[in-house]
Image (cartoon, rainbow, N blue to C red; front, side, top):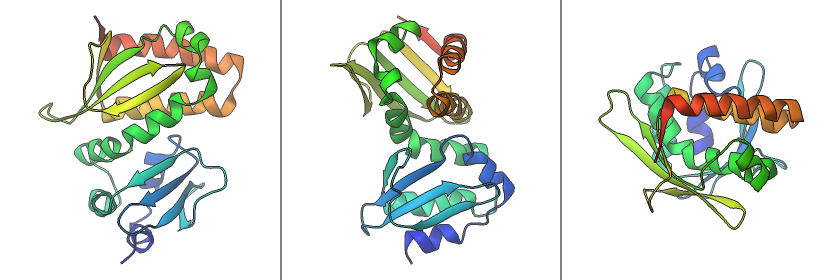
Length: 203
């Protein structure tokens, strides 16, 4: 079975569609073991999955076959529970964050200073119950952001966020990127500074 066939078999309930809505509009997915290249697009009441990469994806997500199987397992009943949500976000976190931070405004010194974003941070994506975490390092070097799996360096800020908080951040950032207006970026900056106080500690 291909990834295309496996994912098309997932029940497309409104809950599944709404879970991904606002996180992205259209992405490309590559599967390491099979070499498959897929397009995933959020439509009004369904998720379109087809062969080939989109011409203008919001971002590209490289996956392994185990991620394909896990996605099927996590959503096979047409809904996504809290622990399944954490596992999904754990897989998508690096690509989502990189794509967001690669935006010219997010990557600029001006944008970083307006939001008062530190140039080295550790991020813990906490599983329900708090016994597991996926960890990443965010580093700003040579006017670009690096999102590195694992923890490196001495952070200036440490984030501890749940899957739901990560999704909220992505939706807010993605909306600002899509609208790309001064007012929208200003709203995002104000929201981010308030949100950051609830999920992080400055060192």
